[in-house]
Amino acid sequence: MSLTDLPAINACLNGLSTLLLIAGFVFIKRGRREAHKKCMLMAFVSSCVFLIGYVVHKVLVVKGVNTPFAGPEGLKPFYLIMLASHVLLAMLIVPLALTTIGLGLAGKFQTHKQVARWTWPIWMYVSVTGVLIYLLLYQIYPHQ
Image (cartoon, rainbow, N blue to C red; front, side, top):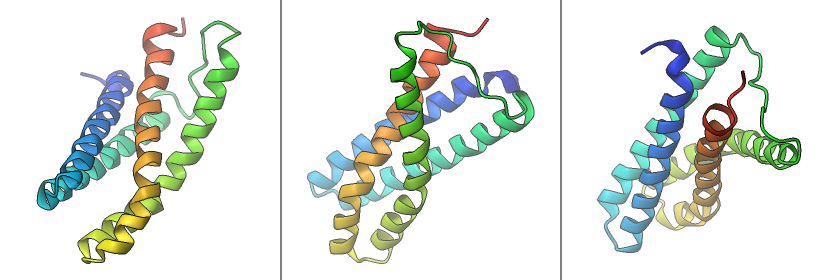
């Protein structure tokens, strides 16, 4: 394993976050509060490890240069919209997730639930689009 493997590892971490978010959602809907809590905390840890890996890759491997989109020109506008929305919402999810987790851990469940109605779908979108961006850049249309 080397630093060039980081994009694949990061995509796996995003995928893991997605699965944990889904599991956490299912658990809370079934009234399994403790299982929900564990899944959501693990999703947060997975997302944090992803962020560290992403920054390391940007700084040490690609030296801050973005990986160019090598797919068809007709797909590029859709890719750029997905990328821009992913980046913007990824910045938003950090304070949202911290707030939601803090409220849950503090036992403020009504407010936690209200904030989570925004946090969960945004976090899901960021996790899923992170995997899609990886697939487009490194697997489907790799840059030569």
